[in-house]
Length: 397
Image: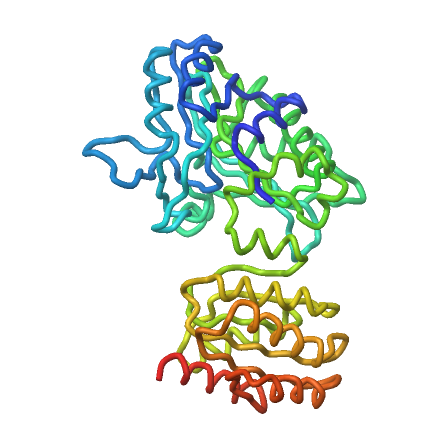
């Protein structure tokens, strides 16, 4: 789960990390009052969406010379005017894709005098099962570009959970960033704070980009992104309360409410599979036969008829889907339960596209009887290769 910048800044502030003062705005008429709560003389007006590249982004139907999603203002009136211009419009960045995202929130904060821009992040290193720090002197840029063009400017190291964080880690970051004097002490304190926050809040990612050195020589977190482990949200009610469902794909949101593992993709063949590994294999073989999957969908090993029905509804709600492949290997999951769910869903929402069903495993014959006796126009498949070939042929002719 991701949160907005202004929410991340509030968490940083609660932990004592250095951030600018700011006020979130959700309605245009609140913008002037919000801006007047800050001292100035420079205000920064930031669109709040769950995507990077806001400053370099552009609004749909933008006028010539119009700025992106991060704008500077030199008066309360100008800040309010810029906020009003952005609210309700669709911002397109390199991370949103061409569809963009609607700006429903604005964050107005005090401007900062910047001497240097740095990069600092904490991530979960899946290889070592540890928390890793990533830092670079090239702040303000996409870290992927830095890694591709100047990898020597990135320092990465993990923290041993047995010994935990120490001053050594903070000094290592400080020296890599070229900090001096009091800045080293500030960096050690910040690294300790961020690590503690990362662990206590069950984060998956914490990115400060840029971490700035101001003209008076102090460190400040100028921007912040945070991602949280969705599987741990049951013990993080305060974090869960920050969830903005308007930023999520409606199909993925609906799937999460039924405990379905669903990720929307750009293809034309909808997939319903049990088991993440089998789902990946199904997507791969669809590509092998010349088509693209429209989603990743793992209904899990203990899916019920109602859960399968909802999964089918989510697939068919995607206007890009031109065909559906149901691929079930019945181990814990029984083939007859899947078959009952598919039949119930088709009868409820209708079937406007080709449907190929491949069943194997527990109660497979009973599952096939349910499908064959339903009277539905379903294409049966003997194995995964046969299923993929048939659905691609049905979609592409």
